Image 1 (cartoon, rainbow, N blue to C red):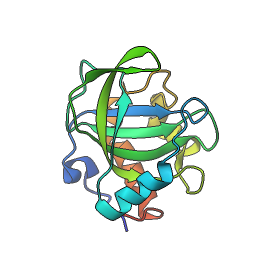
Image 2: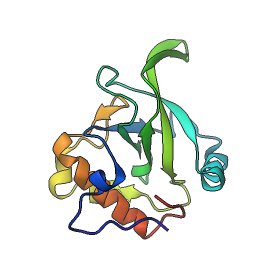
Image 3: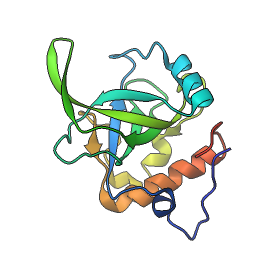
Amino acid sequence: MAQVIPKNSSPVNQRGLGDKAFLFGWNPTKFAWADIVDDIETLKTTGKFEENWSVASHKTIKPGDRAYVVRLGTEPKGIFASGFITSEPYLASRRGRIYHRINIGFDVLLNPNTEQILTFDILKTGNLAEQNWSPQASGISIRPHLIDEVEGVWLDFLSNTYYGEL
């Protein structure tokens, strides 16, 4: 069961998060995640799963920064994974193009096809509506004044749905 953070405390400070968080996009119509079921099982059984991702904010991102992954393209759309940046940005080739990439060590990975995810109808309300939740480029910065709120909403959502321990 997920850890529940008291309402009068900051989840970012309690979880040791830095002052930066980034949003990474995944569009299943463009990139299949064929092993997602196995990857979820790896995270459940070992407590570790790491994957590389393209990053637009390669000049400002660093190890220890918070990462959220949002599903785009097909419903349901929203956050389905989170973790921490575990590498410096590096160059890598994908489909004949060179991209800046980073590694994400996941702490939560949900299967959007079979599990509830934190959908846009929640993410696009209140202060969170200021953030672009449908990035054209993966690895965009989350507005600094929204980081605590995003993490709090995510943890609240997970407290009712998640299998692991945060």
